[in-house]
Every structure is written in C-alpha cells, then in structure tokens.
Image 1 (spheres, rainbow, N blue to C red):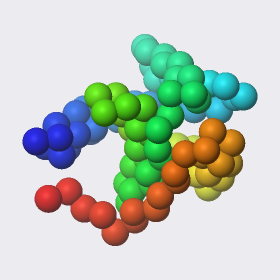
Image 2: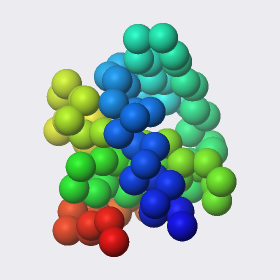
Image 3: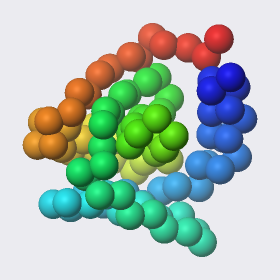
Image 4: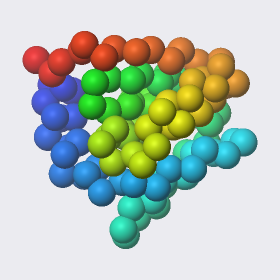
Length: 100
C-alpha cells in the first residue's frame, strides 16, 4: 500500500523541488511556490534509491528528493552522508531497489 502511495505522489508532488540547503540543524528546500524546513533531529534514516533520495522522519513522514531535480547531486549525496554521521542515523544505498 505504501509503495503505491509513493509511486503516485512522487512524480506529481515533487517534480519541481529544486532548492536544497543543508545547514547545521535544518534542511531547507524550496520549489516555485513552496518551502520546507526539516529539523535534522527529526531524521531517522536516509536511503538513496536509483532515482530518489528518501529521508525518513518517522513512520508517517517521509521527505523525497528526486535526483533528477538536484543541480549538484554528488555534492548533495556527500552532504547527506556527512549529515547522517552527524545525527547518527543510517545512510543506505539501495540503488538496485525497484517499485513492485
């Protein structure tokens, strides 16, 4: 059920997210008309999939970053790996994972 939900919302709701700024205690994102601010203390896990990066905040909240919308993907991945170490959460690479 959850996979179907993400498959449906990811393309339509996250296709325009382009601005990502990781600071000491927050991640800021912006798109044309919306902004989000996430406290790094809320992060439970970061997972890098083939096409997206998923930041899990809790069982009901997940932040999705489409890789094709990131200007400097290698830099973002490096920052997220450093952030995962800093806040002591798992950063997993599941690059072969596919929706079923």
